[in-house]
Amino acid sequence: MRAAGLNLDGNYGRKNGLIDLLACIPKILEEHATWEAVTKGFVLGGMIDPKELQHPVWNNMMSCNRRWASAQKERGLSKEVKDNCRRQFQAMMKIQLQNGQVTAEDMLAAGLPRDTLPNGEEIQQNKPSGSHAEHMQYAKNMNSEFQRKKRHESRLRKAEGKYKDDLDEFKCIEKILTRNKKIEEELLRTAESGSIADVPLASFMKPNADDLRDFIHCRKFNGKTFHQTKLYGFEKKLNKTLARNQTADEIEAECSFDRPCLVWLAWKLRAEELVLKARQQPVLQVSNLQSSLSFVTTPDEIVAKSASDCLRNSKWVEAVETSIKGVAICSVDDRMIHNADKMVPLMMQRLNSLISIRVDEKCHKHITLAFVRDNLPSVAAQMCLVGHVVSSVETSLCDDRLLVLPSRSTFLKINDDLGKLEGCYLCYDREKDKWIRTGFASGLSTCLGSRIKKHQQNSLSMTEMRKSRFYRYYPSMNASDNFGRIRNGYFEDLDMYCAMAFDLRNVDQICSVDGDDSLFVWSKEVMDFLKKKAKSADVPLKRMQTTAVAYLWEICYDLMLAKNDNMSDSPGFEGLGLRVKKKSSKN
View 1 (spheres, rainbow, N blue to C red):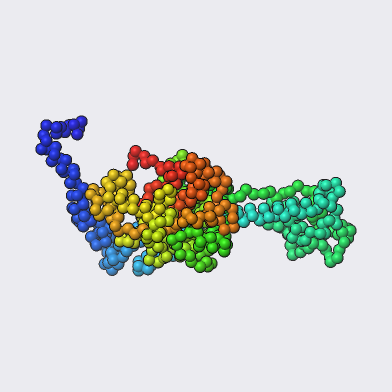
View 2: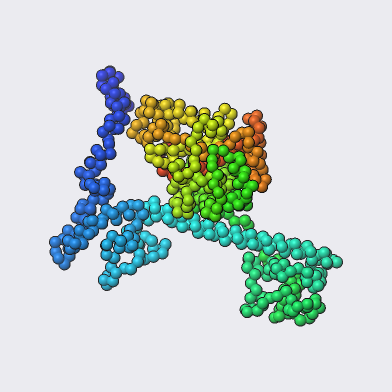
């Protein structure tokens, strides 16, 4: 203050008075800067509507419109039109603020007339149409959150559709090339010189029609489709032979490119170079749809076992039931399987967003994140199997809550028995009916119960409040609270539920590698990383695996929370080397 020209060193009364004022400002703001007091000023200033308490104010806005304000009959609007517009305005404004657009259907539902062309003809739809002309559609805010989400989800659906098509082509071509190789090996056994060019026509009589078709496919077409019409024209069937019981000599004498059969074509093309080329395994490039990401996924991240594969595997379901504690198992049905598969790309999208926001850029390729990506299908299946997921993932937007509320599910509150286990827990604000945080509890002398007791202690500490947004927003009722103006509630308002847990005496299937009933994917790179960690910490490898699983559950449940409700700022896996992104000095 002295540098700014205010020297109070010699005037202790003013100095102490100023200190008292600064100390009381938070309390003054809390007492007097109430919602009613603040909004009243905006209403009196004509900035927000007195009834709806939202901007703009109808009369202030329309007073600038000549047709509205004019009293001339040929220019002004009728009283009926004005009254109808006035009544519908705030309802239309709510739609605009919520959806970023008031459509023609919304206007018709409110009894508002359609827009007209210069010739007086009514516009019958939202014209002009098409993504290239979206900015020309009336009453549309391209930058609204809802419209951005719609465009982003449209790009996600297109990316998912392209990925499915590419994956289908990849698998189909891989099968064709595999069968072709098998046929070639069988044919080479009949060639004395060991060359495919010397295989006699009679040897091609043994493979069936499908095998011959694959053999020809590899030498004629570079794609997954066998174009029969290019080989034999339209409305003609390409059979294995021209006639029943036809011999090799008869086939050689009677067949030609104008009148072929599969045996003859395969024999003629036997020495040709392979035209069909193997494809690179496709990748669902969800990360490309996120801004400010410095990494892309790699083919190693695609796991053969999907969420639906897990749920259809009775051994896997049984392993979940016996190994994962604190949950209730639901019966598997088609709806659950469909929901689980739909969750995976949505979780991948949210994971990439979490990484860009919370993880230090130097750790974007950390091995723990590869472990998470590998196991998204498995965890998605586990969440669906225990009834923790909303019934329809497809209708959920990018930032919506995907977890069901405790009143609609089998979530179990953490009691003395569950408190002895390790795993992942969830914090639920029962006053505001929302999930706000996930947590991790695993390691030496750490369990669910002890972690919750630690939260209770921290909610009383001003030091912890300064460090953590969670404790600032949810301090204890008994804390000397200097953060009242930003408080969302009290720690006593929170209920702690078990997300998923394990008993260290029964973790064999959790730590199982490459088994039919293995609950998680443990790649060689991840196992090597955990072995080094276990050796340096002087703990068993299984202990390090269970720690990784608890972190995995924590981050996956974090992805399921509504973005605006989530109180967590950490990315998880801190104990295994994943660093939190440092906030810039501008913030």
